[in-house]
Image (cartoon, rainbow, N blue to C red; front, side, top):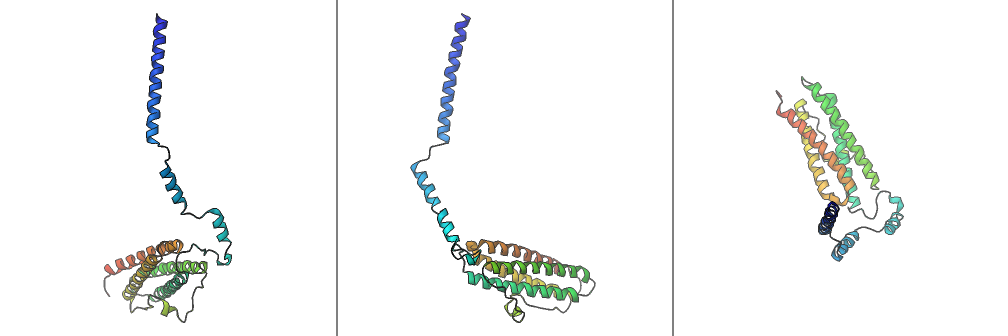
Length: 223
C-alpha cells in the first residue's frame, strides 16, 4: 500500500514538473521573441551605414601622404586651418600679454595676482602648442609670423595702466576667446570631432580664467 502511494506521489510530481517547465518555456518565448523578417531588414539597413572592410582598406591606401586626413573628413579643411591659425595667434598674444603683466605688476596685491598671470601664461602656451599640432595634423602650417600676430589675433595686446586695469584687460581678452572658441565649436560640430574636443577643452579653461578674474575684480578694494 505504501509503495502504491509513493508511486502515485512520484507520478504527480512528474506531471507538475512537466507543466512548470512548459509554463517557463512559454514565458521565455514571450520574453525572447524570435527575430522577425522586419527586424532582420532593420539590422541590415543599419549595417549599411558602415563602410565594408574591403573599402576601408582600399581608401586607406589612397593619398597616404595626407596622414590623418582621410576621405571621411567632413569639414572644410582649409577653413578649419585658417580658424585654428587665428586661434593660435590669439593664444600667443595672450601669452605675451600675461608675461608682460607678470613682470610689470606692482602694488600691495601684486604677488598674488602675478602668480595668476604666470599660471595663465603657461596654460595659454599649452593651448597654443595643441592648436599648432592640430594644424600640422590637418596638413597645414602654423602661422607664427610675429609681424602679423596682433593683426590676426582676436584678443588685443593691452599693457594696462595699473594692476586692476591689467586684471580687467585680461578678463576682456578671456571673454573674447570664449566667444571665439564657442563659435568655432558650433561651426565644426561633428564634422571634425578631434578638433572639436580640443577646442572644448580649451574653452573650459578659458571660462575658468574669466571666472577667476571676475572674482578678483568683484572683490577689489582701491584703484
